[in-house]
Image (cartoon, rainbow, N blue to C red; front, side, top):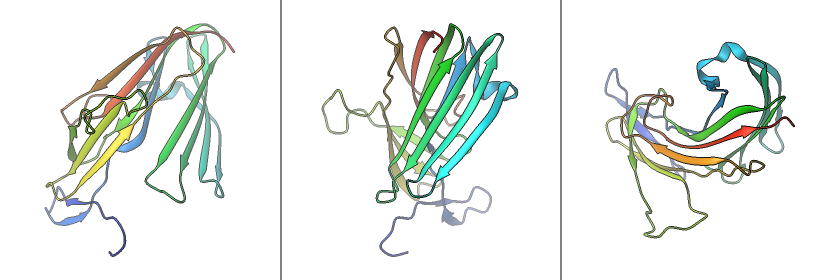
Length: 190
C-alpha cells in the first residue's frame, strides 16, 4: 500500500501478519435506573435509522424501557469525508419521567486483539479542552501502534457528576481495557 495508512497485526490463529482492528472510537452505554442498556438489550426497541451519504451521518433512534421509565436515544454518528480518522458522536437522551441516568462514552476494545497503553498528558500540560482518554493501541504481536483519543461534553444537566475510568487489562467494554467517561444525573421528563 502506498500513500496510505495500514494497521497490521499478527493473526491469533496462524501468527501471520495481516490487517488488524483498533478499538471502536464511539463506544457508548446508557444506564437507566441502574440497568445498563448493554446488559438488557431485550429492553430496547429500535425505532428508526437513516444514513445521509452526502454528509456521512448515521442517525439511529432507540427506546430503552426499564420499569415505568422510558429513555429515547437519538444517536448521530459522523465520519469526515476529508479526514476519515475523525469520528464524532452525539447522543441525545430524553426520558418520560424522572429517573437515574448514566451516560458512558469512550474507546471500546471489545473483541479486538491487542493491548492498550495509557498516555497521560503527552504534551506535558493539562488543558481544559484536552482529551479525557488517550490510548496507544498495540496490535497483536506489536506489529503496529495506533493512537486514539476521546472527549465528551454533557449539556442540559446542571447537577451531573462526571467520572473517568481506564483499565490496563484486556477484556471487554463492560469489563476492561478501554477508557471511559461517565456522566450521571437524576433526569427529568422532557
